[in-house]
View (tube, rainbow, N blue to C red):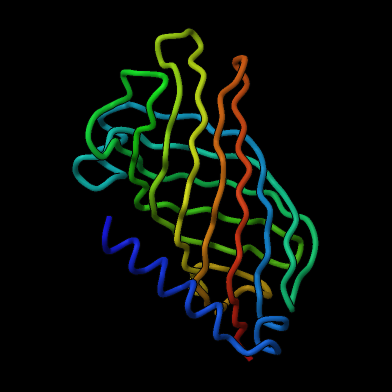
Length: 188
């Protein structure tokens, strides 16, 4: 956790000292919303995730993005590996922390697909004894643009940034809202 805090602090300092022209011309701003659903299958988790992770979280959604090369809508599909840091939640009035690893989301646009890898932490509060459960999880993730896997105008792109979001299950309805912010550099 200390290493993730150091990485997030380094990104924050980098954003603060970035020249204004670079920040305005080379930034990725995206809002992704949709729904997510877990996969607890032990075989799937073992094949996809690092050791010690408990489930795969799949996401579907869409949103809007702004970059120097493309501004507009997109559809999104992704997944990541999740686990509790200490133990699963037992008290709905307490917060519990978890880890996200091996995350990948693809943003599908008419101008090409942007592939992003991510990892980070989440803070969870909820009641898992209900059927269906109710919860809210706040995510803080660091992402890296994968220009080798991206296509179209995003082929060869690079950059790192911060993704913050909220994932909920209320009244049986799953939803999430993530905000991405960080520099993006396009191949010339």
